[in-house]
Length: 268
Image (cartoon, rainbow, N blue to C red):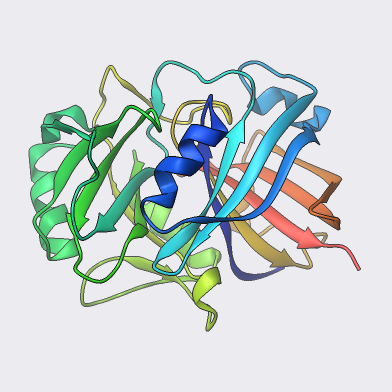
């Protein structure tokens, strides 16, 4: 199996139109929209509340990682801790609510190191339109989703997982970047120690609030899974799906020390 690049970071929302308008303020535009897409029954075990149809909308921005908004008809109460968005923009958006770092599932030491890693003063906000708590820093000429934190109970194993998916560490800043010459397929994740928190849910279902899943474009996913994606319980499902007039093979893997990994393989 070959990982070609990022497909998207999933972001659950109860209102795709309002979330789209909000992300438009950060430079995002719609790539495609599927308002009545099959929610394949193979995903049942990965969802808290399964419904046979759901709405997805793919968004892209020149300065940010691709986002897919999903409306499953239900969004769980606690935000997923599997991926925590890190946004950048020249200024915070109007309506963002300022939070303190202790609202995140990170220790004070991890938060301090995060600021050093990203080499920027960091702030924590909650956006009531997106129903999302996230990290933000100021960037003069760029807006959008810069990276995602990847809280983990075993950071070393999470790094091995990323390495098996063709992510490589940047010695200068500690980010793990997905190798791709195409900007739209690039991704940045940052494994970091998880600290138990009552408002966050680690190893969350696919319909949890926030971002529980990273989707990667793959080729040859019908071959045996990469070792780091093989779990003792065999928590993976594959199925065919037509999305945006394209026939795709979708493989969902519940990794032990990371978010749900979605492998998206075009079918010729």
